[in-house]
Length: 153
Image (cartoon, rainbow, N blue to C red; front, side, top):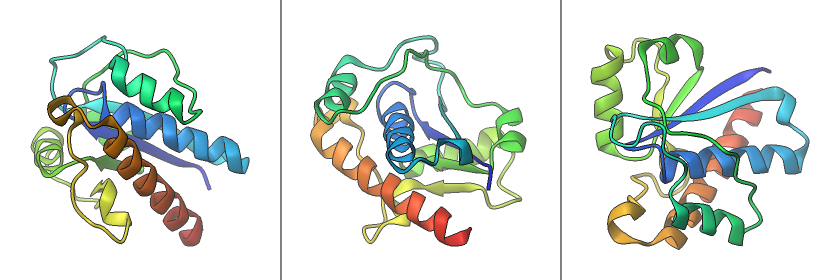
């Protein structure tokens, strides 16, 4: 299996890079890094080039998750062709991805939490400042997504 996954949120400085780093952490822990390519992107242009938001970086570090140096980037139509799955954090992300990418003919676009027993949205910590809850939800979503993908083989 060589699966390419793109995590997507509004600005690509909080939720989607947290998902990218957490998923990569889970892959390293399980010795599965060769089986996946993982990245993240934004639906907006607001934060292009900016690093992961400091409170998000601190929350990851508190849990021993390595944070790679990166800059926010916006999703493109090429991403739809390249990635096997495009994983959004909330309904607005999903709606914006479908609009920007020209719908979803191959069924690649999903919400992260829909892989868990608690389907729904990952609340944006930019607004509620609850990076601890965001971490918990993203970790649960990433673990469920990985389990699902490994089950699919």
